[in-house]
Image 1 (cartoon, helix red, strand yellow):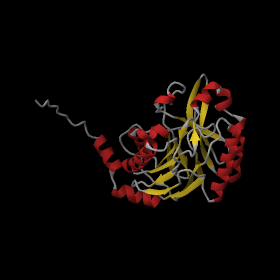
Image 2: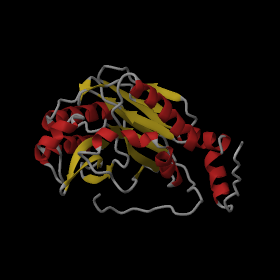
Image 3: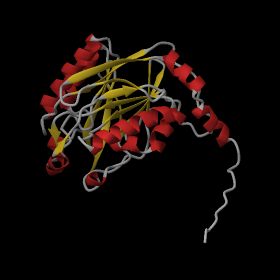
Image 4: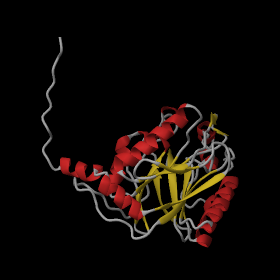
Amino acid sequence: MPETSSTSSTSSTVPTGYPERPLRIATVQTGAVAGDIPANAAEAAALIREAAGAGARLVLFAEKFLSGYEPELIRTDPVRYAVGPDDPRLAPIAEACRETGTVAIVGAAVRDGADLRISALVLGRDGGFVTRYDKQHLFRSERDHFRPGSAGCTLELDGWRLGLGVCYDSGFPEHARAAALDGCHAYLVGALFSVGHGHHESRTWFPARALDNTLYTVLANHIGRTGGRHTCGGSAVWGPDGRLIAEAGEDRRELVVVDLDPVFLRGTRERETLLADLALAGSRPPAPRARFTVA
């Protein structure tokens, strides 16, 4: 992961504080053209402009959107199908961010020396590269081609602290919990979920991560077929109470634009005291545990 300025939380005290005003975000879904990074970057730029026209300050894209999911294709020619630092093919996205003053989080396969990563690239409101987050929990079919990331990532935007994840990360409660313990108010995940069991997973994991940690959860998914998978769309936002706020359809190009509300966030955390109670429990010595064998 590239060097960036950062802070980390190591105590059992959950960071406090709330943003002063709402943050309008967009989670988007559209078909990715397999292996065509310029075409997908142009589509991303168009979506950023559409989202900005609706007042969004941040736009979230699906996992590996720039190439399509396509692990086998990426493996055959990483120089062509993955991106590197200062990749000129990112220029249309950077220009759209700069023109609209919008932050973009774009899924991509990334070359990291001799390794490949599955990453979320963050471009700032000035179009500049901010950082990347590398997926920490690789799905079994990804482990032959990619290497896992070693660190979480928290963004700060307009007083909001935003934790990043990629797809399978969201299935591990500890991943979103680490973001919450770092003071995050929302958890943003670009993913690939397929029809059937994948749809079931997304509709189980995201409300659970939201309520467990009393934070907003945001999903950007693919539509159509990519990497041999029939994806299920349904990009969506859940509130810190675990309830669905808005979602896209299963098979059409769509933007979901939502205001993250600090008043609702604070009220939910005052009613649902999970994080505060976790911090309280963390200040106590571990409770003894008895074990019995039943004949």
